[in-house]
Image 1 (spheres, one colour):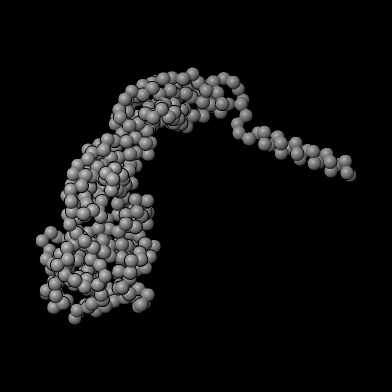
Image 2 (cartoon, helix red, strand yellow):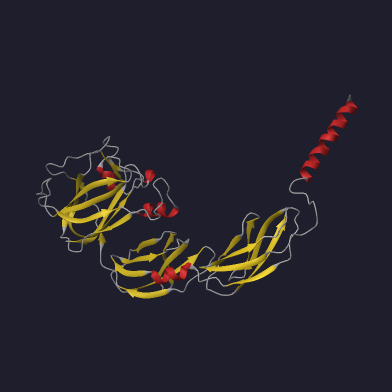
Amino acid sequence: MKKYYILLLLFTLFFYSCKEDQRGQYPVDSVPPGEIKSPAVVNVPGGAIISYVIPDDEDLLYVKAIYKLDNGEVMEQKASAYASSLEIVGFGKSRDVSVTLIAGDRSKNESKPVVVTAHPLDSPIYSILKSVNTNIDFGGIRLTWANPLKADVVLSVVTTNEVGEFVVAQSFYTNSETGTGNVRGYASVDRVFGVYLRDRWGNLTDTIKNTYLPLFEQEVKGKFARWNPIGIPYGAYQSPTYDIEKIWDNDITTFYLNANTPFPYSFTFDLGMLVKLSRFTVWQRQSTLYSTQNINKFQLWGSATPNVTDDFAGWTIIGDYTARKPSGSPLGTNTAEDIAYAAAGEDYTAKADSPPIRYVRFVIQASWTGAGSTAFAQMKFYGSLQ
């Protein structure tokens, strides 16, 4: 019996040893596949699409392309035996590129190489840079750009630090068809800003620099207060957990939950001082971005005095606004760009001819998903104190 168990143990060890050795495809022949035939190249921004005729081999597994990027890195792209084309990517400026095409089979044999020449068009970063429009804004600059191919890029803005060195002031990661960005926090004195782009393969554009004079503004701080005129009642869900004071508690994890319904409805509060508004920033409820109670459409009205009515007598409109989802992706799908945009807060610009105001009235017209109650994590207001 003891001898039987020893033999059984040896057999088991041998079986698992064999099983481990068999991991992967055993070569069944040493015959390489035929060469790739009739390669044809269509050049595209930052790359090329290469079509071909595959060899007539029953055990064909893949076709691969080998090429070098601008920085010398060797790249390899593979396509299955069922494909008739593959794409090479990662190039910066347009140039001739030698691409080696090789077919491989299940026996790990590879065909003789076939070399073709591609001439990728310029990477999308260069056309995006040409589309960038930069204008002065409150406390800095405002940028817009077009990215029709929805390429994954990083747009960086540089400016000088205390010792005159250029450093990155802000970067915008985007793959949206259009984009906007603000760089703020600077005094109203002439300042040089520069813009450049980078793609995910490390290709860089030149930096385009210019001098801008940021518009003056300052943050309105410290004196916000609950205030409700006749006809516009205060509404908060489960007070005090979701009271309006959450809007100015400097904590984006808390939020004011307004229980007034249906749309449109208003809520009001007192800024505590007279301000010629330049802009304001609204933070969404961070746990439910672009959904449920977060607002999608609204108006902001203002008044210099508390002598107002619910029928808009005494009020002046500051602006009519629609919230933005940068990626444009379906509701319920938030990209990294969407999340970063919401975390930074969404800026809204006041009408240039708006008079100084102290009392504000938000008129809520719609939420992202139609929820009646609406939530606000934080708000900040900017302008010149009167």
